[in-house]
Length: 501
Image 1 (cartoon, one colour):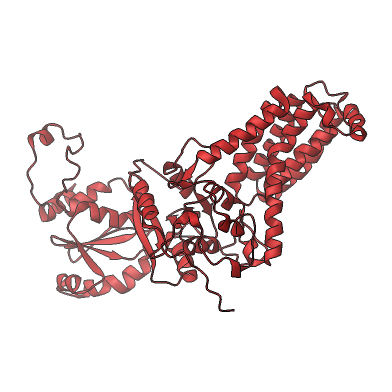
Image 2 (spheres, helix red, strand yellow):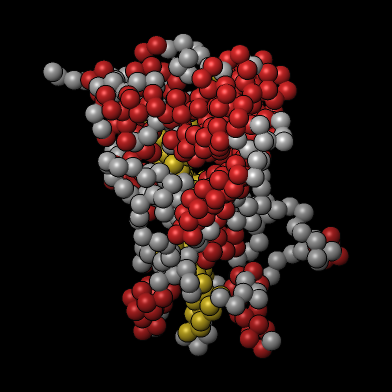
């Protein structure tokens, strides 16, 4: 108590309190915009009961240093920055003259500086902030969710400045602009909006910034949470922002005229506007020969049809449309299902649910154990289910093929969306046969047609019809033919390639 009284007598600046504030001391300030006068005691009160908060005094308690030990570089602070102040008889002159000491006059700015990793220095009635931030972060490593065969293997980390440096290394242009925003009333997480001036459309840039500023929430911990707050249609099962952990992918999105977002504490970046077909593209497509990239794209779209329709088609055919089965196969199918006591719809839902349980278990367990559970569990359960007469051999093949095809889709979020739609299609096929399957597919197409990404069409370049863009959507033609940026981004500079031969 003696220390607090001494601090109050030395640093507390008197200010008037309203009658309402004196009567209701425990209530919040009725005018949150009114700034409290900055004093050492106010800062000490803000961090009361914070065991990791460091408060040191020097010069017979005239000089006070405040910081969080795990956020600052203590060696630099005590070896390089504090000794000149301690040796000087007039520390105020050094604080005023040195550019690294920035004077603050607002309590809010001082608190935010300390929380961000700065050290606050109080001398007499003046307060200064000094940048000694030393964040703890992991090193740049390879992405585990977006692995490629050819090309760079760097991936983003949870440190925003590291991610920005990875992007700056690839886009060395003064036209690359970075806008810093903050989200979360409690967490106050930093969000950086990136775009290339004179290429990106200003309308999209302002729209993304506006949506982020309009967020009112206590906490956002990851970029995948952030994009759910700024989606055009938050109730849609499909994401309207492309997320990635790869700096090279983000660099290509910036050059193409899109807007990119990075959040401190998240290894994921997002880009917009985006169309449905971008989720089936991979960096590998551009690092290999154009013919291989085109063939791989066709394979992914074929995998999409397999993962969405194969199990539902089995249910439809075995329930209503036996005439669609070839004669050579119908005897095998009939024999396989002769011991199964369930109708095809329950049989399919049971096996699909089992596959999803194995997938989730494998993802949550440690890597080596997860791989063992996925392989052994799938083989053992599938074989046991067939022998017990709970399912047929052909359904096991259909379900396994659908599961494998879902892994071909490069984007995990889009793959999960179609896996969920698969259950709905199975139910509709079990109720109304091929008509139900057709209605389900029609609903997906209609829903996708109504979606937008930052106001642009989600099915571009099909709707609106832009055949020129097909060369880089359904195909991956040679770079010499990809001279213009996508029509969807409405870039200010549409030309991105000028071949001289």
